Image (cartoon, rainbow, N blue to C red; front, top):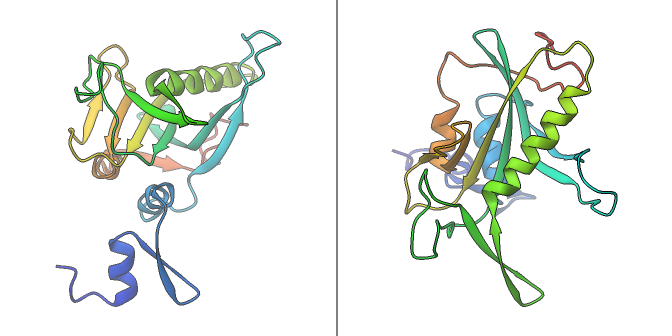
Length: 201
């Protein structure tokens, strides 16, 4: 199907990027952005940093959102957090179990040669709470639905896994991510945190 494509299109299809005449492997976060931009150009905000206002003064860590976008559906505004994990080893309650809608979603990180287990559900839920608090500070803003998508490189689990207790929180493969924003009923618009109820931002 792709063999008859010109080299530059075939390379992009396979996740490669042409830079100064040389083809290099595209970073996973760029691949995610590219798949989104191919349908909805200039609609993602990257590296959005927010602080929660319910933490102690000694807790100054920010919540950094990889990508953020806004869409309207049936008269309701949605803000979608996209957390990109360049990993294929997300697991459930134990490392031998795949992530499911009932289980935890976890990763192991090596921090200065110290292995640490990270709860990526909690990470994204913290981001959502920061965004929710920010939106509450906007005067006369309409209620906003916040969705959380974690996009990863794994191929051993289902394309879409929705959390049982929060159906707005989803774990997506790159194929699941692409299929998730395909429905024609979704009208995507440029995200505006200043005026989230704006219809022509």
